[in-house]
Image 1 (cartoon, one colour):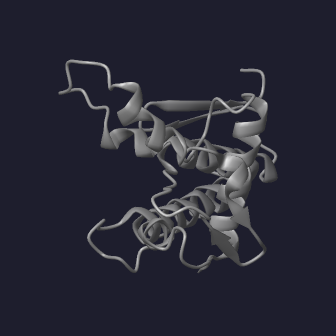
Image 2 (tube, one colour; image 1 turned 45 degrees about the vertical axis):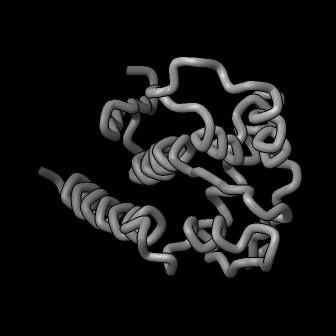
Length: 165
């Protein structure tokens, strides 16, 4: 194995450790209110929450997904879990659904360089749908920085390919 290959493997191990640490910080024990997503959700309608560059980048990635999907991919839609679950056998009544739908609108989320604010009490963000894609893109950039022509990145079943083969 050449020097570039060894350096690449070492860099991938370091990157993996960074993503694991980030994942634990963001998605760790949901009972821990100090976690960033839980804090953002708990602060909805009350105050802005400090975020780091990585969280800001993920929120901006969520904005790209929202815009590319014409608003169909919305990280604020997780509030639907309150009234809609697999156990529920009937569709929610319009009167039950309306107040929840009022909480869904990524356009209302206020993101600055170092804060995020959900302006309506009860709003929530759920980053589960974007984090793997964000991680795959970041890993692909690392792979390409080592001038590797082709690679397959598998993140628990979400697969991202780099190159032609």
